[in-house]
Image (tube, rainbow, N blue to C red):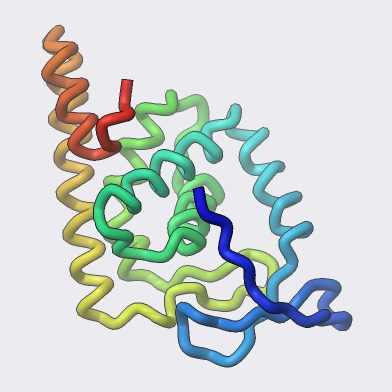
Length: 171
């Protein structure tokens, strides 16, 4: 796993940092990783750890599909799902299905980081958003097909369908 290293400067009035916006083309954007991590952890705990599982799986799908959106953007969309749309008590598989069902709309909507409310999707053209939304829609169809196969007792076929979405490491 690669960890990108970015230059940054202190952003004292906001108790965070300013980093270069290499994705959106703006000069610098505010970030407060400690505050966001605290917010993320609270949402994750309130959802039985499913935010982290969905975010990791969504990032894996993103990598397997040519990174239609940047990784941070994907995490923000998973966070948005759990803040706004996640049904209480759903299983991880239900959350994955629901997240991917909502993902085409999330890609087309504005996505903002929750600390400073700065947009993280500014760097995507409408064409890129459309392509990413189409990939997400196809993934949601495959997940629904896998769930149908699983309910029919066709476990191996369901796993193969899930692998089409999440890659060969899916067990």
